[in-house]
Length: 88
Ligand SMILES: [Zn+2]
Image (cartoon, rainbow, N blue to C red):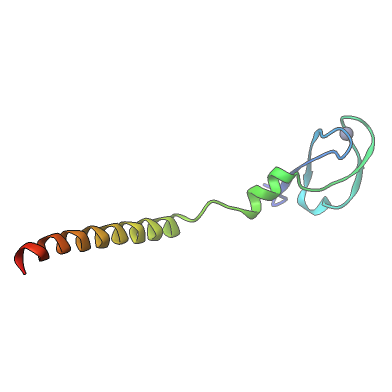
């Protein structure tokens, strides 16, 4: 088992996918697809995927709970106003 993380990048010339070990990032290699020298870096898609991770479940749950309680509060406010007119 190896701890080396492999990253996916793309050739700056032909756009071909290149997988490389994480510690080789920034190194210049010959592209296996077109043979031209290219710098190893993360593909744009991969950068987005690693930067903008989906919200953790607990944050989602908190947001849902917050949204629900807000909805209920508004609903309650409306009902109370309606009832208030007839009872007060
Ligand atoms: Zn290439």
